[in-house]
Length: 139
Image (cartoon, rainbow, N blue to C red; front, top):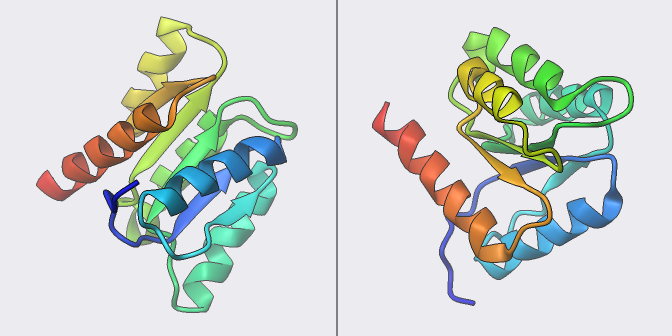
């Protein structure tokens, strides 16, 4: 696959390691050479975000699952968007296995740039990443 994405630092949040690895592989095939940070739950994700800033290698894009033990992706999104000084402009895509219109609308209103229903194809993920980047760059 040709390079379609800029070389950003991604944070992948999903309790299923196989899903995190799948997304990481899609990103790599699309030209991302930075190894994505990964977290299996919200607590780990918050730590990865904070550590990345301390190392002066901030996260530039978040892809998070909705359903995880210890808190939902929506909880994480709310936390990310509440810290305007550090995380306001990070594009955020929510993934979910549930196609519930109310949940999706709620996530968008909370600050998600897009959503993706599992299972998904590589092209679907990449198109949403590109859309989110364009959306954030136009603001």
